[in-house]
Amino acid sequence: MKAIFNNKIFLAFLIIAGAALIVFLSAEGMGYYILAREKAAWLKSNASTATLEEKELKELEKKNEKLLQKIKKLAPKGVYLIVDTAKNRLYLNKDNETLRQAVISTGNGNVLTEPGGKNRTWTFDTPRGEFSIKYKLKDPTWLKPDWAFIEEGEDIPKQVGDRVEEDVLGEYAMGFGNGYFLHGTLYTRLLGRNATHGCVRLGDEDLEVVNKASSVGTKIFIY
Amino acid sequence: MFLILQPVSGVNAGIVERNSFLTEMLSLAEKPRSYFLIDLAEGKMMLMARGISIREWTFDNIRFMGQPLPVKPFFLESKSVQLSSLRNNIDIDGPEVKEVSTDDAEAKKKADNKKSDSKEADNKKGKKFELIALELDDMPGNYQLFLNGGTIINVRSQAEGSETFLKKAGYMLKWYAYYPLLAISSYYHKTKFTKIDMFFKDKTEAQALFWAFTEETECILLPPGTENREDFQL
Image (cartoon, rainbow over all chains, first blue to last red; front, side, top):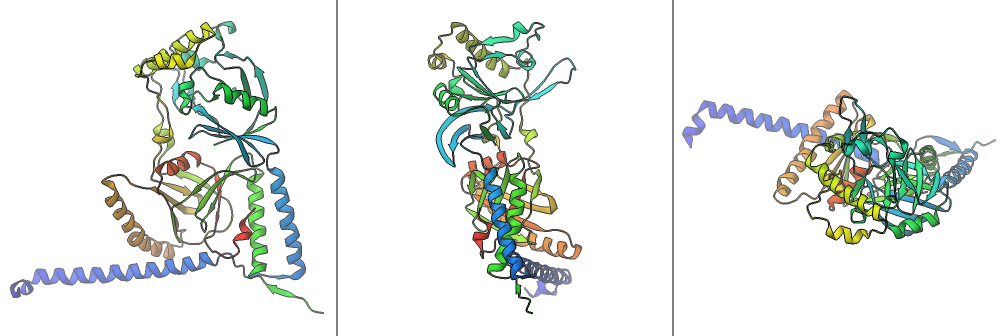
């Protein structure tokens, strides 16, 4: 043991390690001190230091009430739809109450690039944000877009008639812009999965209910 | 003549703070985009649109450190995992598409018959079918959200299996040893340093948050102070 402590190299190592530890602990302590001060500031961050006249305070109260009313006015009136593309659920809501929950299919998120150096690319996402139903169709027909042929390795037809496909969209379709629809499906076993090219597919019963409850202008919130 | 000047504290402070909160909330609610309201005191996060909550997340644990943030909109600059890196590219000649095509062909047949019974067809369909898609399960359960202004939100979820101990140890080391050192650096260099840590026991909640919180989405962070909570209610 004595021999170890007599070893100069070991002793030097001990001194350097001890000094490093002291520096590290001091730095940590300083860091904690700064963080504690900042945390206290955060907890008190609501308190303003300005002074206001009583009249100004009353005016501010009135302003707050007006602001609140403005926000409340922005809320959707009547029926609105919420689409959760992660869990593949659609909620039919009215005045903050869910009237019906449906298992749906939304965009598969895949990327398709047109071969042959044409550089057209499609990302099959269901668009997110706020939309509204622009039109409603009964017994809709699908006019297949280019990507539907490219995906299947087929040539893109020149005649519009060759793009028509019937009885694949269910009994109703509700368009919410840019070619996206809420519609029915033949692939019922894929409900609950991300399986579409961006449209929202519903089962027959849910489609019937949603179609009946909604009208042109009904808001759709998609996330 | 007396001028009644009142220091803005207590109830009055609430009026001023409520005014800035409502002003910012209105500015976000007027936009046709969804936004987040992150309540650090309540440990909740709400996805909102037009002033109404459309989805809510509750954290099992929440911590924060660093400089206080004002009640104003921030936006998500980036995430530690890019969604684009998780996407599948459709291989037109690949076997996956052939499987999908089989499904399509069968669906077409059903359409031709017009009275197809999809359930029956589903049962007949081979079990080989595998859906190639970007789904919730593909989302990460642990990631970082980088807000403008230098704020970083760590989202963590329960680690699985043998990773648990190592991940926890790594996290503790980072939070309790590395971040205090970083705080000194930011103090001297006068750079922004705010870290928020959100923990979910349920991994799918963290994954759903990753899915919903897209780049450019705005958010308001409510301060963790517990006074005047009603001032931040709609």
